[in-house]
Amino acid sequence: MTNPAIAGIHHLKFNVADLDRSLDFYSTVLAAKRLVELDHRDKDGEVFAYVLSVENLGTYLELRKSPERAKRESGLDPVTFSVRTHQDLLVWEAHLTALGVHHSGILTGVIGWLLVAEDPDGRHLRFYTLETHPFTVDFSTDAYWLGS
View 1 (cartoon, rainbow, N blue to C red):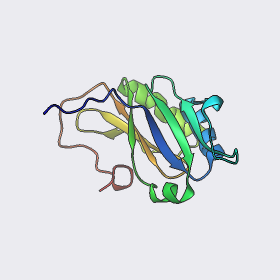
View 2 (tube, one colour):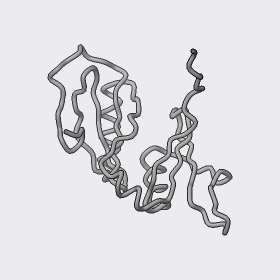
View 3 (cartoon, rainbow, N blue to C red):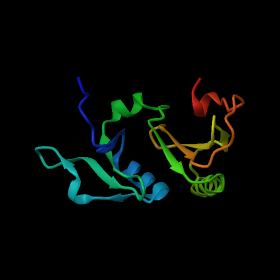
């Protein structure tokens, strides 16, 4: 029997405690653009989710208001963004520092380098290089940024 096919990722969804605070963060940090025409509204017309476009992400990012779920997701690292080179990662580190975003230093991964930033709900967003180094077992093991 053949497995059914998927066509890719339709969108990413992050539960957030505060829509506007998260929109500000993702707009500032990732230059995300809110697609107002795709706002999700309940039957009373109240907005409960924003849909964002992020250049080169390849899909949409939905921010869904759900404070309880957002709290439970604190510390999770649901997505790893690609950056081309170690030099690009240095630029990201400077960008996050300039914005006052809580983030790791540059860490060594198994085959590349990474940087981890924290969003307003405590979610860990990873930035990992497409540029590689030789496979290593001497990779970073920071418990806070990379888990145990």
